[in-house]
Structure formats: structure tokens, C-alpha cells
Length: 155
Image 1: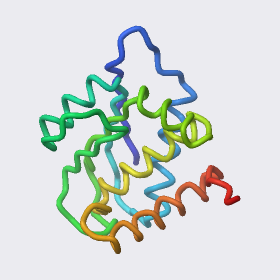
Image 2: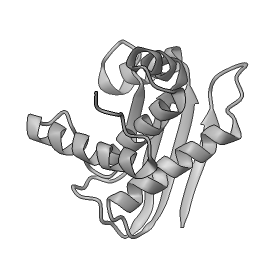
Image 3: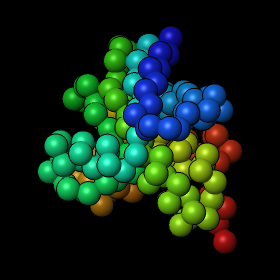
């Protein structure tokens, strides 16, 4: 069973049902792609740059906004687990909009990518450890996006 708990910290902006379904699909597809067998619980919070900047400063000692933060509840390497609460994902929609425009793709694609990226962190991947870890995580992200039909077309 998959449980996703959504929260919206953005004043004056409603998160549409299609966005919730997209995020659910990205979470599910990441778990399937990674061969995750157990039940899973994930919380997803949508916010603005101001909110995520505070979290980034508080938990990473980086005083700037970012696109997504991951807060894993488990300390493991690899995706197979008995299941349970995996952790929290925080997505700045403000940042995601800018990145979608910068990269020339849809906001939906950017949100799905950020969700998959964050889910991989919750499953124990960390691209910041080494170049090899970065390569592995990129490969896994691409596999999820391919499976969702949202991969970036090579020019």
C-alpha cells in the first residue's frame, strides 16, 4: 500500500488534482523502478522559495532557496526495505516554474522529475557523495522519467 500525505504551504495558490496525481505517479513509478517491495508512506509539501530557503538554511546551513529537499527517515543504501514511512519531500513550486522555463519543458515534467529525484534520496541514493554516485542517481532518475514517458528528448 502507498500512502502519500500532501500539504500546501503556499498562500493564495491551490494545488490542482492533476498535480497531486502526477506526484503520486512519480512516487509510485520510482518505487516500481527501484524494485521496492514494501508498503510506503511519503509526505509531500508544496511551498514557495521563502519557505524552502528557511528549511535549507535550518537543515543544510545553506542560506538560499532550492528546488526540492528530501528528509529520509531511514538510513540505508539500496531500495529494498520492509516498508513503512520513507520520509518527506518539499518542493518549491516557485523554483520549479523557473527551472521548467529555463530547461524548456513543462512544469509538470519538472515536478515529476523533482519528485523522482527526491524519492531516490528517500531510498538511499545521494548524488553529492561522489561523481560515481551522481552518475548512478542520474541513470536511475532517467529510468523513472522514461517509464513515465517524460524523458527529455536528446537533440
